[in-house]
Length: 245
Image 1 (cartoon, rainbow, N blue to C red):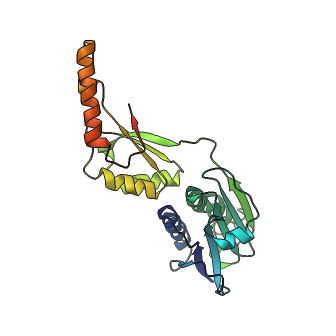
Image 2: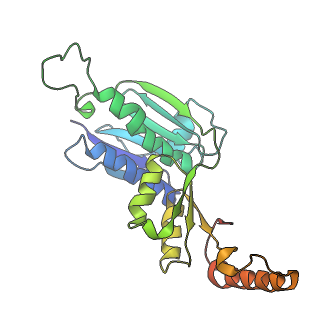
Image 3: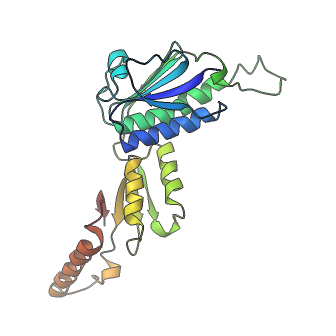
């Protein structure tokens, strides 16, 4: 079995680092060791490897020279498998990440299954796709909905990393979290979300929690000032992508 190599561009972003992790985990299920990872060196001979080139045209010269598609939309990606070489190209970093996610769902899973009639009674219906040259394949995909996500109470997210990892698998890019107060690890969680191309929008209590019901205009203005003060104190310093009212 050829050793697998993931070859990325020179300007590797945090999102593309996670794309490498996603692809590595997918390949590890079918290989006896993790793939090696290299920054592209155009003078290097990669003949001993099955190469997975990932990135964008801007950051990976191999993709710029060998891509057969023209991507034009945010988060769009293309997967090309040809001559036992794989190109996973994104229009942007998020596109690279989603391309690596869908290499597993759209290529590995469908390809691993043999003809059921051929194997009927044999006791198995799958094969290790990395034990032989990869079957040629090509696809492009782009989201038809710009913001895709979920609304949740923050206090029920017991493991925010796994939660965000699952959002990535579903290609969701928005997380709205409602909390009565800002969690102590809010900045850490936002950073991890951004590394996975997920926007974080905080729910902000402005009605019942701030006593705005049935108040006079003057009192309501005072309460509004308190709301803005709370925003400045608790939310403004976070690298937050929005506030949900």
